[in-house]
Amino acid sequence: MSISKITADEKRLEVLNNFQEKYNLNFKNINLLNQAFIHTSYTNENNLDILLSYEKLEFMGDAVLKLAVSEFLYEEYKSYREGELTKYRAEIVSDKNIAIWARKLDFENLIILGKNEKKQGGAKKESILACAFEALLGAILLDNKQTGYKRAKNFLKENFIEDILNFEKKSAIINPKAVLQEYTQGINKKLPVYNLVKEEGESHKKTFFVEVSFNDEVIGFGKEKSIKKAESMAALDALKKLKLM
Image 1 (cartoon, rainbow, N blue to C red):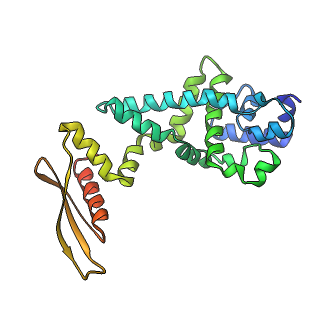
Image 2: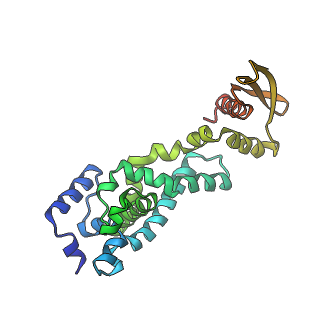
Image 3: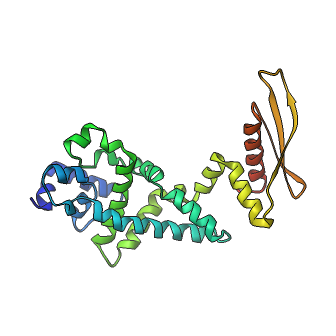
């Protein structure tokens, strides 16, 4: 069975055309777009060549994603060092994050799975969603070798540029102490210092007040029901005051 037979169903073609119209993709080869959503469980179950699945497209798309994200970060964060940019890129292109993007584009209703994988909820699996997203970028690249990369980059820019460029702020909210530490060490290799300045309330429901200092200057303040959380709030306060988020 050839790839054309896999894509012959009119209902499937309608779904693919609606998808590419919604996201301004304009594929020359609709079969290539469809291949980006064909999981290996489908080809295996139907005794098809594994090359009809999204595996090789995923390989190309992985490279496209990393290059495009690298360019976005390089252009936006001009003062950042290589290590910082590498760290953020790794977080941005992680399966966990890319799967979130795939869900936003409703990939769960686009991916073609074998019957067993479908029963096991394969369309909701983080790894499958992430691979299909990369495969889509690979398909965009190969659909037109002259303009493919530019189109793939524009697709990311049009749909996910805020997620990409705001990832630092999200990271700061998730782990403000780590972000503040990277900032201070980047200045003079010193660590921020957290001091418990006060605690209030009964022993079973205390509130802790923490200050964070750098270069002997208080740069943030936080209060919470645990010292650890109060330190995080102090770090977050410092990041806001330093205009790092």
